[in-house]
Length: 337
Ligand SMILES: NC(=O)c1ccc[n+]([C@@H]2O[C@H](COP(=O)([O-])OP(=O)(O)OC[C@H]3O[C@@H](n4cnc5c(N)ncnc54)[C@H](O)[C@@H]3O)[C@@H](O)[C@H]2O)c1
Image (cartoon, rainbow, N blue to C red; front, side, top):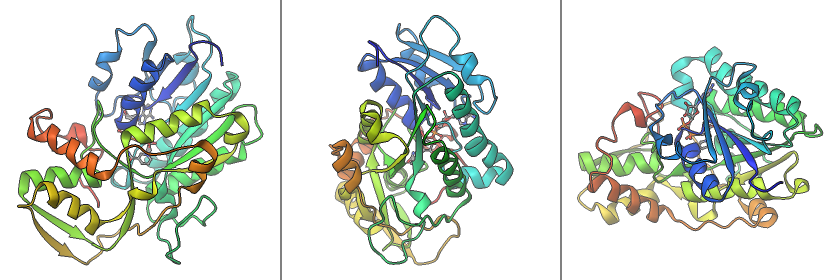
């Protein structure tokens, strides 16, 4: 890569993208963000004066959006980080199969096709560990484990992965990260995902209703998720071309009961009600192996779920986020655990 490599981030106004954009700028990259601003654009305001930052508002499904966003005097991007999507099972469920497919599958194809014709050498796709669904054997799931989607969201992410893996020998090298569920704060925080949501509910209602308490999930702090993505940007091509990496940490494999203990440590007055019924849809019960990303990319998480609970609680207690229940912080009206 040349000095000041140029990175194009789709979905850069979102939860992960807004944090990632800040990290890229801090590390000296030039960044073009393309985002339709489904949840607003305030998350990008502090980057606007930065000489290495450009913003282009567009729906990346539009077949010429990336081409239009990269017109100008900057050299063609060195990599595309494709984050734009309807993120999460409830958001996909709310719009239905056709729209979810348009946003999460067709848009990926359109962004990739343009990346290829623009001569961009690297394409990083942010997928999800939801793709594994339920682990029937109870063994930790690796990147080679059979995918068993339990939701429309996971179906769309798998379809995008398959399309990209078919392009593994094309000049634009695809890399896939299957992220654990992210927690922590960002310029666009989300409060519709398990850790952030539990902290907010316990703080506001002094009560939590927990479904399937023994179910195991996997979590990663936003700072670690972004550091992992940066490793994918910097790694030599032979380590990333056509590769899939689970992105998270073994310490982030926790049952809901274990998360509740961490919440009760800081909010001991919280009453916890358990309901062992399913609510349909995305019922994940998984332990994830992160051995590959540690071994191949040298990834090591710095933060724990306990750190995340403390940070989110402090932001709420100090009034830094006026109303975490605001729809700006949620991708859909209903949320799942
Ligand atoms: N947050 C998580 O825990 C998590 C876990 C695994 C994978 N992911 C994946 O990471 C990516 C980012 O997730 P997030 O939590 O930051 O979501 P988010 O909803 O906060 O951000 C998504 C951003 O993409 C934009 N966008 C969506 N469709 C677009 C389109 N067609 N054109 C232009 N912009 C569009 C939205 O306006 C939004 O700013 C998604 O692909 C998601 O599936 C997230």
